[in-house]
Length: 342
Image (cartoon, rainbow, N blue to C red; front, side, top):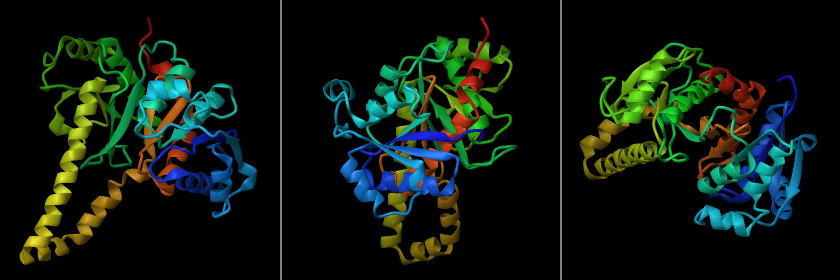
């Protein structure tokens, strides 16, 4: 990195309290001389957690606030009632130049709304998108991780053709920078692979993406293609994406429960699962979401990385690394460069 990057951590967000976020940020300061951590939250809780872990004190600062948003609170009213909430304050510190990006494992809606109230949209971007990664069965070409990026998964429920084209550009830029995939494949999620399949906005976006230079558009894919890794970037509106990702998560949980049931019920199945154990461990290793850190909110002039609510220190550290990489490689500029010229 040409200059140190400062990441503002919403210490109060997440299921595991301040301790895991502080541990993750502390580890980051030991692993990289180029990344500074700005811990936003209750100073007493932060100091207690820091006293328990090794860290580079020169690369850590604390910004105290006693307010935060709970995981089950409604984002709008909560942010209105708590103007000093840690996630909102972290976004304001980035806006004001005291940090370069935000990482939070807290309330997703509050994080997205904090961005919308604090940051500016990139010129040419009408709506922001919440992206997420999903483990896939294949790795192809330049791709060096087993994930595909899906966007939007909830920030823009009713996306227009313009929005879908913008999402494609933003997703492609993010994949190039974060996954180091020089030529990521981009596809629209639809109910058929034919160009005319899908609602009018998807058909129009298909036509426009076919003509758009700068990204490798491979056409439409169906839901079954997502876990196969058919495309590196999967584009859809927030309603479809949210339903899709929750369905995929539900299928994964069901498969795990079936395996547990089989293990308890049948000696022969237990023996078979034991034989497959090394393969299962390998699958867990390559699809471990913690290595990816978190999901970006794309479209704003500043970056917000939403870590999973269950994130522990390792995931927080990696979310910070992802944020720093995006900042250092000027993700916003890459998006601007890829947008259609009017």
